[in-house]
Image 1 (tube, rainbow, N blue to C red):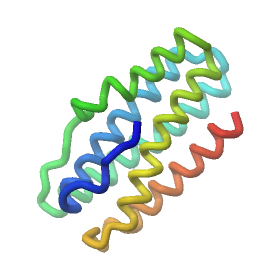
Image 2 (cartoon, rainbow, N blue to C red; image 1 turned 135 degrees about the vertical axis):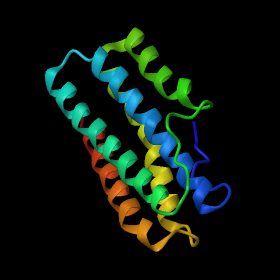
Image 3 (cartoon, rainbow, N blue to C red; image 1 turned 60 degrees about the vertical axis):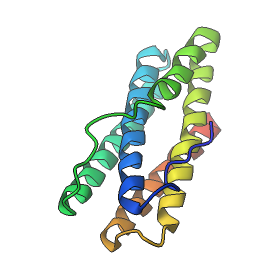
Image 4 (cartoon, rainbow, N blue to C red; image 1 turned 180 degrees about the vertical axis):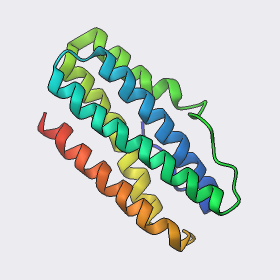
Length: 147
């Protein structure tokens, strides 16, 4: 699924959607970790999940700093699509299929961070946080592609 997160509305709305996407991503990782058999995969995906938890914390703090109420959880629309891919993959193919489902979800997070980085209305104090998130996403993607 191609995401529209990061392109609609103003920067505040896009940033709030990004936080919701991060909540979705954390949950997808937790679902994947629970279903994986390979201990190395579990450890690595746990580290990636923790990166996403850090993203939520940093983005939430940024929103609060700008007097914006941050989202407190996942998006209603994309939530089931995001974790559903992992659950279905587990039914059909084990660890490799689960990693593939996470990789497919990763396309959305990579795309979103790249879009957020290019937004002309981005707050100056958001740019480093977004860049760091994009670098994490690219690192995760490389690992998933290698496995």
